[in-house]
Amino acid sequence: MIGLQQPLLGTVETALTRSQIGILFQDDALLPWKTARDNVALGLIFGGMERSKALAEAEAWLARLDLAGFGDRFPRHLSGGQRKRVALAQVLAMQPKLILMDEPFASLDAIVGARVVRDVVALVEREGISVLLVTHDLEEAISLSDDVYLLSQGPRARITQHYRVPIPRPRDPVHSRTHPAFAPLYERLWPDLSHEVDHRAEAA
Amino acid sequence: MLLDPRHAWMRRLAAFALLLAVWEAAGRADLLNPIYAPSPSRVGAALVDLFADGRIWPHLDATFTAALGGLALGIAVGVLLGVAAALVPLIAELLEPVMSVLNAIPRVILAPLFVIWLGIGLASKVALSFILVAVLIFFTVFTGIRQVDRRLVERVITLGGDRWALVRHVYLPSVTAWVLGNLKIAVGFAFTGACVGEFVAATHGLGYLLSFAQSTYNAALMFALILLILIVVLLIFGIAGRLEKYLLRWN
Image 1 (cartoon, rainbow over the protein chains, first blue to last red):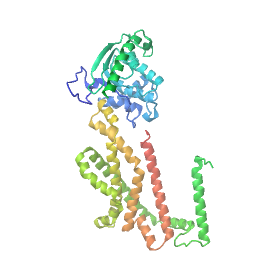
Image 2 (cartoon, one colour):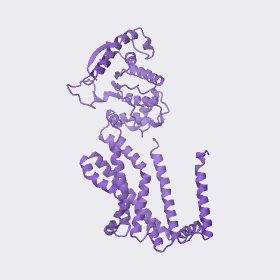
Image 3 (tube, rainbow over the protein chains, first blue to last red):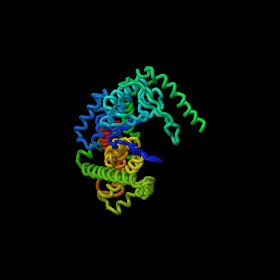
Image 4 (cartoon, rainbow over the protein chains, first blue to last red):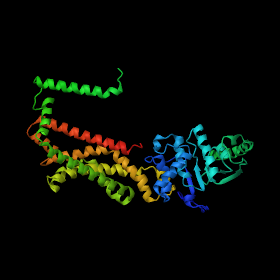
């Protein structure tokens, strides 16, 4: 969708331009020789914003992600959760309409991860950003999403199922796991996902 | 016995002082032949002498000029060729075998050739320093760029960075880090080149003085010069270390 790889067959259509799509990878991939603030400002500067203005904007985003006062730190001197927040600020500063996330929270330990996820959900809901999240975590998929698509095992992965998540927004990702709609959906999704995993085991 | 690591330098200093004391005592007791192993006090006196009448300065000047000139040129050309080879496959194809051969041989054997080509003046010493440093830096940069973290490249692209942004924000800082990581070795090479060049044929320089001390069997002067070169290189190591620490403070 963002042109890092070309589709084998068919085409990718989006109503968005390239600059309206942000990406959050599993690893934070911040430039180690730039401070947190410089890292966040990078995309803005590439977009043509004046440097001083971009840095001020970056500082504001760091503050919004609970990182006020950490702007001068280098990534090496930040914790895993803080680096994830910097990477997030970097993406959000570009004011995307859509963010692609590839297991972005997998590398964080439970409590830190839960806090980052909570803040992400709050910001994304407030700014009206769509998120396409790839995850192996069923609970994460249900508690964060409005729609869950089940992909078959690759190669040649396809969408095999679509489930709607009837949990209302705004959501708290921890509390939505205790919402009455959560458990039934989990019960439905679990066997389907297990089936796909078994499928791969057979193929192998 | 448990050693307190904080006092390591004190123990080293004490051991060194003890060695000097034994050496000095052995010298005064006529146990050592001053022609081969002059006592530390004689070496010290020779060192003081060099500075006292001021005749050392033109020699220091010559060696420094050759070493630093070769270092600067070597880094510049090494980085340039390294970047070019990493980015253009044809250049890598042509350059890599030449550089590998130059890397494999002891490059100081080129010293006599440089004297024939460039004369016994400064140029042949700069050339030897240069060739020692340039090959080292070439491989540092060449292998370094090919190992640049792909994720950082992808990150900059997805943030909307163009080719120039990649060079400026990913490749250049990476190259700087590798070059600085090898800066001390490069400094050592640069002085090796300068001194060996002067040793072969020269009218000035610490290497020339060494060769003079050798031909006159003046061991005290030789020790003094070795000590002086040691101090000079350690001093530059200190500066290089600081520069490295400042520029790599993110690490």
